[in-house]
Image 1: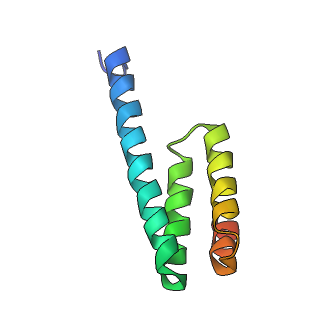
Image 2: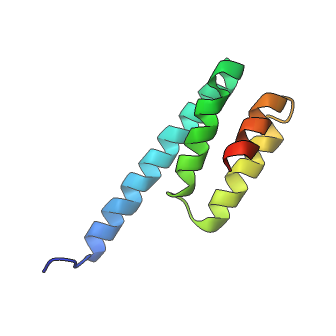
Length: 83
């Protein structure tokens, strides 16, 4: 039965993806608070999260970050460079 993906395997992958996204989101928030030295790492995590989310979520999350951190121009620049 190689190559078979049963329903419980898919649920496990979705759960783990959800855990990773939550962890990454918390790290992005912390890195954005630290300031300019951490912006590149935060933007990299946002890019990595894109592969774990649906298309809509992948588009909405960076837009929400831009809105929340609009005063942090260098952070926004890093997001734009990597996304």
